[in-house]
Length: 482
Image (tube, rainbow, N blue to C red):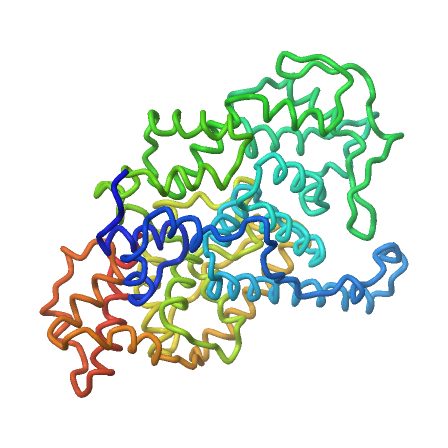
């Protein structure tokens, strides 16, 4: 198998398996074998749990069993705690993405965060679900599916707390099949009804712990996807995993996210077959993709639009910085259309070209200038309507929108530490700086007008030249691609 030797290919790997890397890191990779980069650097020790991003200790949470007897003031305090907690969790996770030494875990977690799309007002439930996703991001899909399905966040979001023997609720069962495993069109309405009966009794207690309520479970015989038995929820998940269609569906989504929006049926068939026979080992599937020569084909490199979170994290991984208020990250996410923990619906963010419209593209191109020059904002987020929220979610969405409006009247107060970034180009001759900067930041450099970069660069010093060329390159349409 051929080794990766070109910087463009290495930068491609860095962006697809993470959030981009700096020139010194890419230069170090040039002396390593592809297998070592993928295994030791990007994947890292899978069995070692990720650093916790929890922001609220369970001991600090209120007694949810007393929720019904709380005073109006106590309820208000609880809402404020949840609201702030979710903001803090967002910041903590973004920080983990920026600082991770093994970025594939966080990149996979971001993928699963969209795949298992969920919204909840409860900070404890959000923490739990994110921990489940990050702990299992590169493990076995079956373990991940089971843990997510038993999380209070998902059971609440998909109404399985209301799924009882006398009155089955089909919402959870339907989405488990349509969005999490088989995909639409690969099951019948009868399968949904029988699966819903199997999931009766699955719920959670006030403290956020999964609970099986035996008296609410339908223990009759069910018929599901050609099998018959006295199934419970665990049985349903096992049956779904036995279907090769599940492996194909998951592999296709991963291929479209990490490789190309245009699926290659032959490659997906090969990958999904191996994925299935590996026992749904996610790490093995990702290694198979990143080790394949076709992954580095010129038709794949630079053909994917960065998600807003990828764009923001990529900038911050390249150039260290701190914000006076780290909640500014929520501002950028909201305007660009990917606010973590607030997917647009149960299907998650559609991605691809959906990230770009006329207004968001213009703002995307200005993000590096807004941050690195601390320019004043002059773009307003799209107005929110009641239809875009559900109950308490709508109220919090309005609060976030109000926060954003207040922030837009100010400059982004960021402290930029240019030193490590500039030092990375210390061995590059002055006449080659523009080419080297464009080469490390972009996947496709043939469209870049280097004379224009030279024209608008600040040549008063080498440092200023590097800074201004970098900001200009990051402000190009090509930087939106990876």
